[in-house]
Image (cartoon, rainbow, N blue to C red):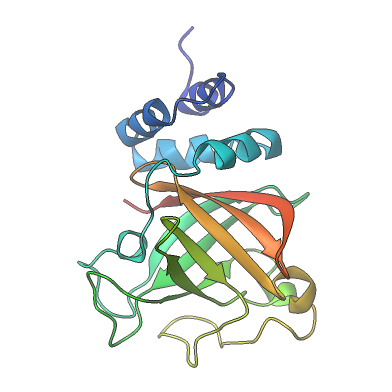
Amino acid sequence: MAQGPAEEFITRLRSAPIQMSEIARFLDRLTHGERVEAIRAVGRADQARLYEAAKGFAPVRNAELVPPSRADLETVRHFGKNTLPAFTHFEKRFCRPVGQDPEKPEALHGFNFQSMAAVTGPGYFVAVPDEARGEVLIDYRQVPQAAPPGWPPVKVNERGLSRFVYGFMVDTLRRVSTHVTIGSAARKGKDMHSYFLLCQEA
């Protein structure tokens, strides 16, 4: 019996070593819905292995997370799966601030859209490139001054319950395929061994 996208993705992730070029080609062949299904089937151990395998594979840039064709302040959705014990499905929503170069924005703004946002806060962040490593840093220590239309009010991440979820955190984002990235979280510079996969809307 043929494997579905999720099962085949996990099978490929469990190869030794992970073949990143083959993983990228496989994901690029899928539809958006199949890609989301595939990444949301991946657990902690496989995400951890993929994050290490993705190091240096291909650069990820702000202009890919929010393409130049999108207008300033227009929302770009990235559908996610994290490795937390519960509420593992979420989205990171990005936009390009007014005044940034669409071809090479120095910063993007974003927040986390998830079912517990009323308790944890929106988890605002600023995404900045790490040019030397070809990665993007999602910095929760920085927040936008104002929310784009339709986004929740901006809140800092070092107050209330947000402090325990997003406070003092920086995520490192690496490229997996055209639409898929993988991230790892650190708090105060210490790796938390907490990972997430993102699939950008097509």
